[in-house]
Length: 506
Image 1 (cartoon, rainbow, N blue to C red):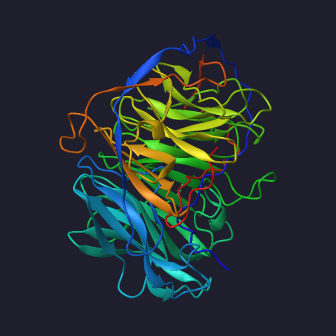
Image 2: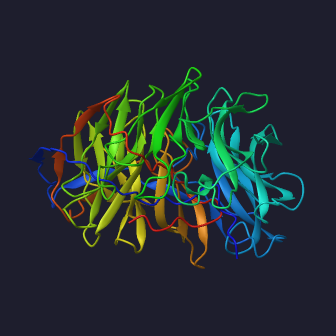
């Protein structure tokens, strides 16, 4: 069975290597007896459209400033394209928006089609992809088109002449960034970015920008393919592109570099010496963060690009790290390994030139920080590497706390992951209900910003979780623009597949 999940894919790591000097400074662990105070949270199961499962997109803006949440949810309609189903249970999925206790079905393009969201802006406009009822004759599976949901309508943004496209981000001006296929046959397109970004494409894909007219082809860095992944309020686009059409001996694909498209120009951000890198975030200052291979294409490090300088953010003592989000203050979160040759990793906060270990509760071995808001609140997941995950919150400089311990009684959903937090402290994610079904969730803090949501706004004390490894800080190194190793890059951007559970991130 062919999967219909070519637009969004769970992140997998790239490999690279580069000699790098780092300085480590010990940082005191929080006292195990000290207790920290936190608000409690009201957990809301965002529901479905009659089916059993619902989802939120990961590593993307799933909650806007008004508390509206985008959801992809099962209907009860069997997928007409079986066995080429949109998601595993072979039910039609629709895009929805939840606000003020109501889940509204935004639907899909006309016909019995599935659709999923990727991003919501503060005006309530939603972007994503929808099947359009056409079978792509080049790969034999249902075609998906980039769409915008606006004022109750779903707008097909079209393509660059090919059969498929995907909208990835939208800003408050209504500009949209994404990916679209043209008509030129391409042996490398399915390899660009994280595996299966466009798993079944046959022709070239290019990054695009839509501004209420025909989509604009943003071009490439010299190779056949590119992908637009992030968009800020200045209209800048971050993404990934091949830099040539010549495959590298070690990877079998051309060099792949992250880019920033600004004022009609695509800027090559380079790598940390390896053959690949990709962005995971773009803020309104034009700073880009992500991960890049080092020179050996075995190890990779988190990076921050700012005004022409590519900074290696280092690790927490291990071989690999990956940045996952950046706020407008330039604070970066992600995950990093603790020891050379070990897969144990913790979430981190990078600020003021140092990487701070967020720690992990007792019994856990791996954690990832996915998002940070303007108040330096961080959410992510923790658990056993490759096993069960749980959502966490980090705030006020204290240790991370398992979010389940802050949830008001009465919910039957166990939190599996929290992947976005807005500036009001509202958190999106997903969990599992008592029937074992996956459900999209919203966590609303019981504070004075949310009157009427909870009966009690008092803080509760939570014992500091036992750190399973020492907290450290790590200084990064810089590579000036234009001096990066010119060898090929293997870049990509990962997305949680709408309609499928995210693969274990730990």
